[in-house]
Image (tube, rainbow, N blue to C red; front, side):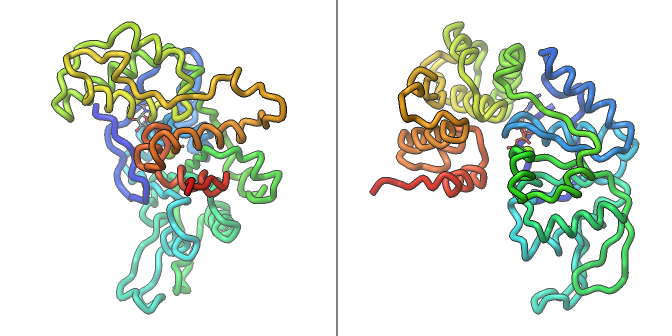
Length: 330
Ligand SMILES: Nc1ncnc2c1ncn2[C@@H]1O[C@H](COP(=O)(O)OP(=O)(O)OP(=O)(O)O)[C@@H](O)[C@H]1O
Ligand SMILES: [Mg+2]
């Protein structure tokens, strides 16, 4: 199987190929995650996938769909953070011809396109309150209207939602509706970070080396033990996506058929001892802000390289730069 990154904007497609068996799984903790997901897959409940960026939530959502009774119907994915609020309603529910000055034809929304299948609401932590209210209604009553339309349409979709943001914090801050949360949280699954799944690092590395050999024509046969050791002690803030990016780069950079320690461009973490400085804010978000700032500095504020090193998408990096108010030095 070739495991590919999900599109970052929005897409409607039949989920292809990803099954629970196709996921690399070698640790007890991840095995338990997949057991829960596979159990829920057959029950038609709404599922909420929680976990850090790059832990595999998109892949698990597709595997759930493919293991469900809906597998012959569409798997439709919407990245809620990538769509401005003004467009989200039309994106989700569709729009009638003439609903906007520019709309010369009827457009079906994701709820309609997913009918009978699965609607994957990705990055729900980024949905605005207006969008949340509309989604709740469609979710609760299985009905909606297209923008500019009067006819009420019915839909039968199974919703899988995902977020890498701490929803409980958003709930406390009043930025996420409790009623929607409880509705989506019929069954929530925590996807553990890679640093708690060390047994997966080696098989994932092998998987990604093979993928690079096939896709980029590299000829990597092995990885130096010292390089493997470094990977086992790295904290992987970007999780499996970061590991994949590191291997991709190393496969291209390696001069021979072996990945050496020197070929690994691991984002330099701030060691915990660096942090224990009187007056330092030791909260996780403060550490994250410092870490992102360091990597930006290291790449000369090259955001493409920084997001690859951190193993997060560009929109996520941009969001965090704004959130932490990071400024490029003059
Ligand atoms: N168990 C796995 N087996 C094989 N590849 C994996 C696995 N988990 C993750 N990956 C790889 O990591 C990439 C990132 O996974 P995915 O997009 O599902 O993460 P995510 O949890 O949805 O992240 P985000 O919160 O940033 O959206 C995948 O495209 C795939 O290459
Ligand atoms: Mg995702």
